[in-house]
Length: 103
Image 1 (cartoon, one colour):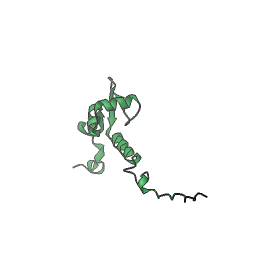
Image 2 (spheres, helix red, strand yellow):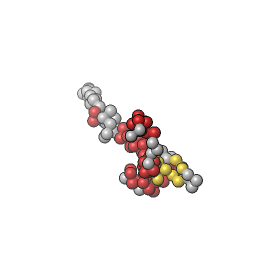
Image 3 (tube, one colour):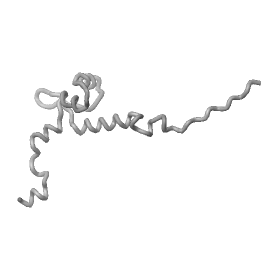
């Protein structure tokens, strides 16, 4: 085996399947997220949801798998059930002011 391939394993071109796995179309991204394609279309129209872009001469909407993973992590951090800092259960209880008896 040539020394170059041992020193620089990434110098070889990536297989076509790896490139396709890095980019997902709307149907595949929806399946990956456990959503319907319609939800992704609505979110894209409203400029919500995970980041997407158009690729190719026909302008197909595509998603980067790594961007979907980052978006999922952001959703987890924004949810108080997953983020102890935001959870109201982790806050120190506040004392009520004592009641002054009526005079």
